[in-house]
Amino acid sequence: MSTMNLTLESLQEMGAFTGAPVEKEVTWKQDGQKLKATVHVRKLSYHSARTDIAAMKGDADGLAGRIAACICHADGTPVFTVGDITGDADPDRGPLNSNLTMALLNVIGEVSGLGKSTTRRRSQGRKKSGTSS
Image 1 (cartoon, helix red, strand yellow):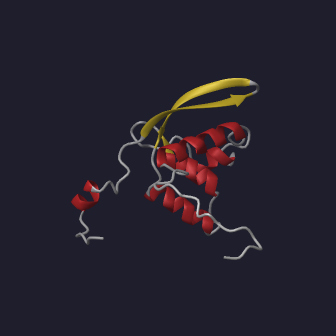
Image 2 (image 1 turned 120 degrees about the vertical axis):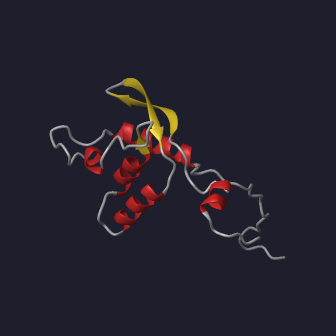
Image 3 (image 1 turned 45 degrees about the horizontal axis):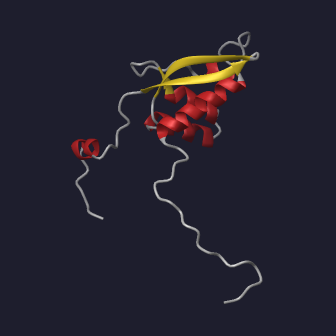
């Protein structure tokens, strides 16, 4: 492993910044009807880390914070507040429905590369319980 000087330029070269939001299509079912929308998704970043920490401290809803931090307009401004997602912003409107919530979380995972392994695991050929070498 080589050591580098930590500069904005070196971080930019290695891809340490998330860049512009990524345009994705999201689909979900609502009242038996399949719906589709175009969304812009910001990769997990400083914004999402802030909401994750607030959730760990009990100061915010983690899932709502993740969606609010990552789902944005093309220019990067948020589509939702946490209150929009939880329903606290408008109790008459209520919270975001569960199918759309899951669809948004899935597209956030896709854009951020969650669940993808960079290396393949090979079977270690483990011995069964009770056997000896």
